[in-house]
Image 1 (spheres, helix red, strand yellow):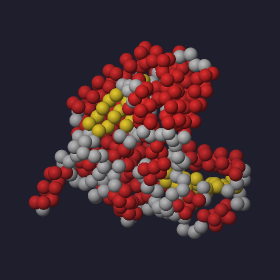
Image 2 (cartoon, helix red, strand yellow):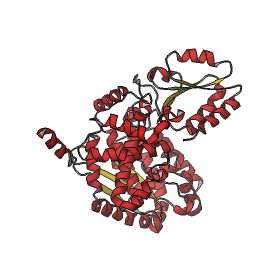
Image 3 (cartoon, one colour):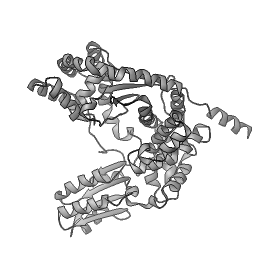
Length: 451
């Protein structure tokens, strides 16, 4: 018992602080805008396109240069999605299982974020890709650079540079770097002896749109900022994304063991709880940041509103349920791979109640199949409207994920043959109609089952 007490005391202070770097970089902003306008980043491309059209003298030559950028950047990307891969039964919830082929693309994006000059950018690219591609990307940056400098000098730098200083001060004063170190240890992330994280603040033209994003790329993250946004409003989001990186950096054997641990639990919805675990832990981390930034009364009011915690209701509920458990684990009670699974499932059931049996929750991970080609639109609609963590499409995915629930879209008269093709013993949700339009309407109704 004395040994266990000593171990708990050590665990309470485990994890070296993660050193945060908040960067206001002209080149990082330019390469981010180019990726956004080329549709490669998930950012609001229209806001940046409008900026260039209305204020930075967009031309036909710019169209050609942007197409060139897109072509060169796509050359660094491998096949996307949950394509061919090992048979795994349950769908792993860590990103590297699905995204190893994106490593080169990530490294090229990071080069654009890290580089401080065009010369530095070309040098970094030279270590990653062929000279022709490195020269091409650098040439596009040179083409857009002088006009982008107008925006950067006029407003970009002034928007993000003071915020970078504010983030640095806030993270230091509120112990967020120490919290990040504890979260890294909780997830057993393999980060090296001196863990660091870089956040590149992106000046979003607020007058042209207010849709922003932050995304983690290994230990680097571009973070779009609006004029009126303060560091206090974004730090929780930043740590949320960073914890996804920590989760991904845990040893593969630990992830496989965690799947086995969840599989051994009793609730029939345990796969859905596991599927959402990565998001639940990251959301819990963001909530813990908010606790450090707010007064007790302000925090109680903030966390009581699910939309403040996360925009997707399942993730909001699970993250809210998980944060007290994660906090206790940071104090030495457990780790992600040591004693967490059962506690998390119990907390999820207490938070969701009867909703653990909701059709949408059960389909947090799913394989969707359909027969007639006219149902492609219904397939896209299902993916867009019904929330999920892992969505794979196609009969070939059935063998890869043999335990994952199946969604079958079918025209009347063909479902029997398709069910036979799926095979016995699968959890199948069937949506059927006389025509493709009717199936789409049925999908829309299924999507409106509510939370």
